[in-house]
Amino acid sequence: MTTPALQRLRERFPQAKITLLTQAKLASLWDGLACVDEILTLQDSETPWAVARRLRGQALDAALIFPNSPRSALEPWLARIPRRIGYGTPWRSWLLTQPLKHSPPRLLPRRLSTRDVKRRINHATPANAGRYEHQMLDYLRLAAALGSNPLPLPPKLHVSKSEIEGALATVQGILAHNKIDDAGTPLVWLGINASAAYGPAKCWPVERFAAAARQVSQTVSNCIWLSFGTEADRHVGDQLAALSGGAILNLAGKSSLRQLMALLKTCRVLLTNDSGPMHVAAALGTPVVAPFGSTSPDLTAPGEPGDPRHHLLTGGAPCSPCFRRACPIDFRCMTTITVDQVAAAVLAALTLARSDG
Image (cartoon, one colour):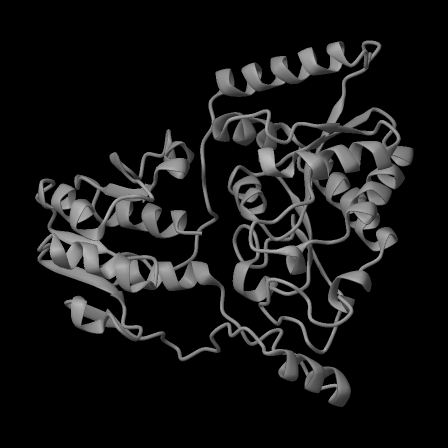
């Protein structure tokens, strides 16, 4: 969701050197992007002082601070970067030379207490859906403080043709190993991601993912579902594969980040929870179908807000979005989203993708 701001920054400063500080595990995400010149990686074990020493050696003129954490503002302050721009959230405004306010004032996400959740259910209190502003716009406003255009752009990531060919060759090898024969028929690759790092409240039930995949496969007879995830998600992929009757190939823990990106690029549609792979797929141009429960599509929808290629489903529960990691009641925000609804959304996204070529 930061890539539109980076693209606008490059438009404003075509000759500038733009250095991105990011977590080491995410560094390869940015390969091939023309809006970034250099990647500095941040190790989890590094102290703010160690990071600041490395930043000081870069002779940077300005720091655009996307996260709202105190530490993300402390490091540029310790590095003595002359201009430091970020949102003036509590505990860090004094670290910034240009603290910004959210403009226009907007509703910020707040994790509901169990009491709040039950009160909304008992009194049918309207949820806050439709009252949030997409996070992409926050990042664009930060870049606009340096004179960039604040208008949205589609998020953008890049994978090469050779990376796609290599990833597909790997999958073809797995198909052959599992004695799955395409009989010369071109396969339709569909993606599925039934996990989410934030917690179970963001996850549509695994058995429903499998049922939706089976239902779509009855209509799209030559499709293969690729299940994505980390090594920790392998058991979810195994469960999906077992429930799908052979329609799903479990790739969880079997690909690097770049390989994941290449495979997401080849998928006609990704069926996913609100997650990192959801945003990566959208930034690579792959249509997304995503059930939303504890989080808000107004705040974190994939792609550019309002992009018609993406189908975002909500159950209409009064307590949604609650922004909790685990549901304290009966998970109605997700269980009211049906298999039929999701399967229909996948087929609609496929139809739109075909009409777009």
